[in-house]
Length: 293
Ligand SMILES: [Zn+2]
Image (tube, rainbow, N blue to C red; front, side):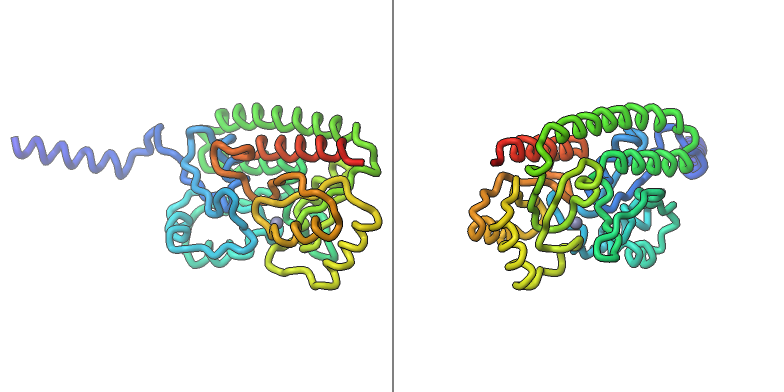
């Protein structure tokens, strides 16, 4: 009897050490919430996805903790935005000692330059979002070739939704007179959106959130807006609201709501997925700009 039990335990242990069962999932770490959602859409139930910088949080200013290092160390795949967005990710990956595959979601996208620096907010154009999906699909399929057909099916369905939303954005924004397409936000996160959909975004803060604008820069923007006006003024879910409140007070331009730039919102709120976030931003932009004088 004892011999049989020992034999059973031995075989069970051997099974768990040697077998790669069909239900084993890929452990993926995504650097921020928008990317985490994209990975979940492509991976479906074939991966456990951990997101480092969560909803409504600022990935520019993030400081990784021990839990992040453990997750990265144990991951099969670590995926970042790249383009200098996560200034903290290279150190985190190196110090974790991980053997994970490291993938960059923005690979292959032509970067926009702002004052000679790469603008990392490439996801704010849906055609770039589709490039992210392609890169995610390729990285997942390389790690688990047996699941490649599932990843392709999920990615195809997701790309179709993103393409439909892209066409809708082009059509909806085309209806707004060009002179009404001026939008003010706190930090410069919408360069790719502006370029893809022919909008103008002005922001007192640069492409990062760590540096505040000088009093002179802010005064110049306020004086410019007093002369020219703007179609819309928005607060962001991650950036400095006081600055937008000050611009509103001094220019008389009303704050028209909250736009989502670098992070999703929490589950159950209007921007809890990449598609929901883009749709929310598009609807808020087009209704506000259309109603502006
Ligand atoms: Zn940003």
